Image (tube, rainbow, N blue to C red; front, side, top):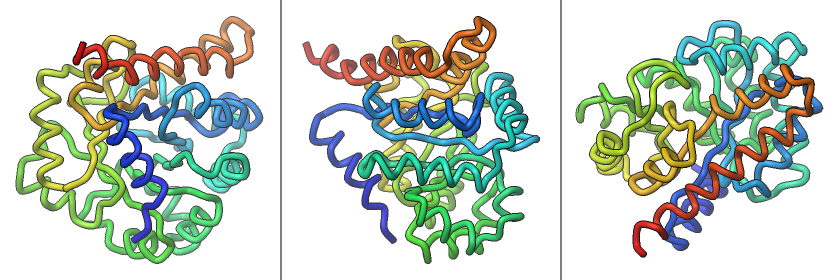
Length: 276
């Protein structure tokens, strides 16, 4: 299985002695053009890895901020195929930044596993997170992704015991996404004290880097998590900037990228501060 861009990025982060910053944004939010502007600006703003959500009408793991972002994307006409077109446009100008799609199974099921995996690989997508696809039902999707050399990245949660982690680790590549809180995105805050032992358990079970998300909204919290995890994910706080820009009748991209810079700087400096 090829996970070249993801593996290379985590190897570089390890060599630098720091955690990575993962920025989540929603395709089509608030429009295709603005979403592409944001995507293209993320690496320079400090994003080491990008998660690109594809909008879905029933995002069961998401709190209000990402629910609203998905609705804005759908209202603008964004689809899974349109998300792949955004990915292709991004990849045409950036050959190095890992790009992960994140969403729900229904649109992929409708698209067709083999066709989706083929088109995702052709668009330059490196990995896929499917929130509502348990390992027991992921065989056909895993087969299609393996054939196209696209990583399947699974979620582990605070309720995942050691036996479950072994199952989660099977056929997972690139990294494991650790959901730091019980509940939906953007509601509770991640706590480093509880995250640290969980990250170690997931690392032992999978042998892969661990990215922590679902509870990171401030630079201070991002820095705390960066000291114990291999990467820190922020999403709700970024799509909130889109909503705020719309409410203020301002361009969304500058607001989002400014927030990304603050979070990325906190992640980059976290372990330096720790060792001083």
